[in-house]
Image (cartoon, rainbow, N blue to C red; front, side, top):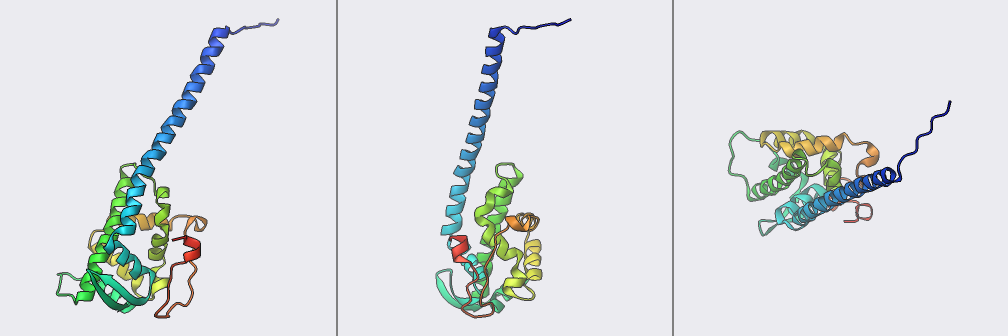
Length: 205
């Protein structure tokens, strides 16, 4: 016994129309989400690239020694100065001008990543949206290798003591990424006072 069921043409067309509307609606939603992320990320990138204190901190993490402009004044510095500036103290003290300026730049840099973490926490961004900043997260993740003994401990003590938990959260999330998804840095001449750690050709910065 064979039972045949013929679907009304009107029902078929209605179903096709519903599916098409669903696909278009989903596409529009995803497009709006991407546009929202772009509109949020572009000002963040501009802030990161133009803020003097953030860029000074980038320089400190990117180089081992040299000259850096902090608070409108040019200083000669080396890694030992940066390590001293990252020292955690119970009560703030009268730091030498170089270390005081370094600490202000570090605070601004770490606070920027706290802000990024807050956008992730509220669901506006995902960690994968922060690829533009992976270079500096890699510098922090490998700071003991790039800077020398004592820097990793100093970094995490600084982040924890001065409540840069959001930055620590970004760094921990970055460390959990597969090696293939992390930034690969080409380091040459480590220990040279003029050593430049950023891989210009690869990062494109």
